[in-house]
Amino acid sequence: MSWFRTLSVLSGAVLAHAASSLGAPPADAALDAVLARLDQASLNFKGLTADIKKVSHTDVVNVDAVDSGTIIVKRFKPRDIRIRVDFVSPRRQNVTVGGGKAQLFNPQSNEAQELDLGKNRGVVDQFMLLGFGSNSADLKNAYSVALGGADSIDGEKTTRIVLVPKDPEVLAQVKKCEIWVSDKGWTVQQKFYTGGGDYVLSTYTRMNLNPSIADAALKLELPKGVKFGKLK
Image 1 (cartoon, rainbow, N blue to C red):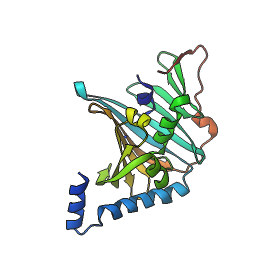
Image 2: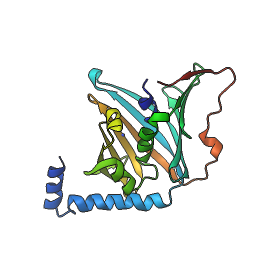
Image 3: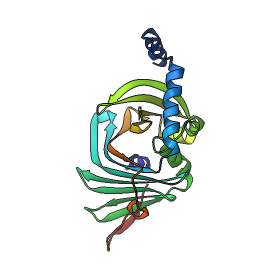
């Protein structure tokens, strides 16, 4: 399992013509509107809890690996966002990202792995931008941003925007990203295209915004006798 897959708790002209012909705002105005919603939501973002469903698609064999569980996100400082994901089905697995490292714990085998983000810190920081308190300035600095179009996720109205990484190092890991932004300015789905038709799709439901989250909730409490290794 690559470290990126572990962390991955994600035609404009035709759409613009269709919007114009229906009397909807032009693509640029529609994109500006959704980015404005992101900016407004990011001002007060402190954290969230939600259910998560992650689909990892391997195109060459047309197989989907589906994991579901819960996610906790807390903003400690403007550029210090930490995440914990607890997958419960089909297998239990705990993942934390933040404070300069990523940790993965498999309860079944009592094995823990850790990655010092080090040289990958920039890649992970850009990943963190995609939905958790991000603003339009940060996105535009890191990505080429384009309007995808209107969509509905779990019955909620959203707007999809398409992002292509500007950093060659990030582009080597992720060819393209898509995020679905609700009318309230929260990202409810992310899709990361990792090349060759493969992608990771994460959908968030039952979101609870800005709850009180203890710092300890973001840490893994590892049992005695756990076996340690390094994520690759």
